[in-house]
Every structure is written in C-alpha cells, then in structure tokens.
Length: 108
Image (tube, rainbow, N blue to C red; front, side, top):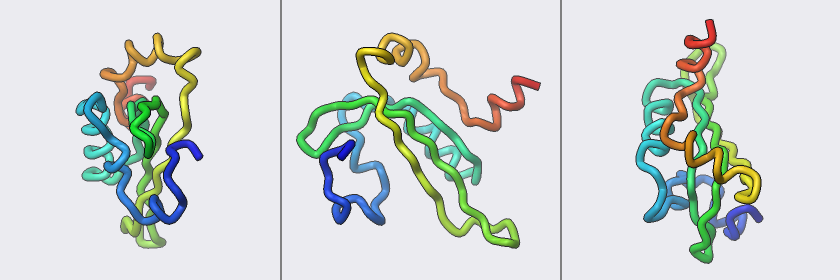
C-alpha cells in the first residue's frame, strides 16, 4: 500500500529496489553501516513507489539475534512521512541522521 508494490513483489527483497535518482547516498550509508556493524539505525530517506512517485519515509533497521547473540536476520520497518507536515524538517535532518547508538552516546 505504501509503495504500490504487491506483497509478493517485496517479501524477501532488499529495500534497495525502492531507491531512485534523488535518494540521498548519506541516508543509504547510514543503513549500510548499521547492517555492517550489526547495530540498529533509523534515517529519513526518499524512496520511490512502483509507479515512480517519490515519497519520504522514516526507515528503521534492526539486527535480529539468537540466544548466542549471533545475527540471524535483519528487520526493516518504514513509515510514511506526510510531506505537508515533514518535508521542511526533513530537509534539515536527512543528511544529519546518525545511527541510534551514536545518538544514545551523545545523550549521555
């Protein structure tokens, strides 16, 4: 519904297929680094629907671990951001979003 793709088209796929020409490489790098480091991260990212329409979303990725603390999979969740309410704030934040761990470290 959010992307215009069917369930069959998205299940089991990496979310890279949603990226397009205006997707910020810095936002993508935040996701890539979190996966490489096995950490949780969130970022605002511009993605594209099946029909090519761009949309902003808040993306969260987390490593799923077993009882031995070994990563067994990842889960990603995206929530649409209403451009009428969020686009101005996103312009300032999209290039400055950090992985959650780094944000927690700054808060302490």
